[in-house]
Length: 186
Image 1 (cartoon, helix red, strand yellow):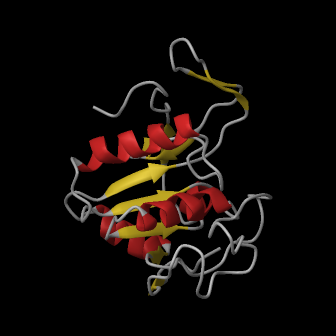
Image 2: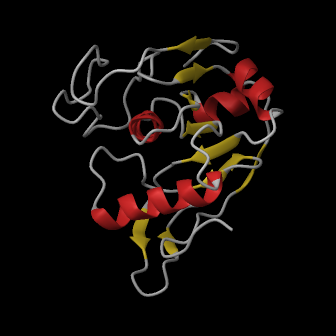
């Protein structure tokens, strides 16, 4: 897990080249499997946050926290878009929960869900700060942040310790509800 006050920027790299962390598929630029594994301390094109830096960023007007935790369950209901989760999720207060958007490969519907919600959350402002997280040792937060960088978002942050580190460092969590798969954040 990241140190509580760690803050580091990584230079932008092309999608399929440059120095990608170990475990990242060089052809896609994403972690494609075994998402629950030790994570790197760099995010090409983005900034890695520890808890202290996250708390400081959270008081910045406009900073958005995006939880990408992939819940156990049957996924979204194709008829009404509700997520059929078999577990509850607590996340950092003020976060938006976009499940599954941190997979290495996004099926077209899931990619559209992610893009639609980023557009809605930022009102098209690609300079708006976005903080992605999941749980400790979860590559889905890294993948989602990386994808946002590649889609042109300029202020992308990743909190690798996720809700585990947040709670360990004394932060409170609140019950979370995922954004409907067929809708978008209002």
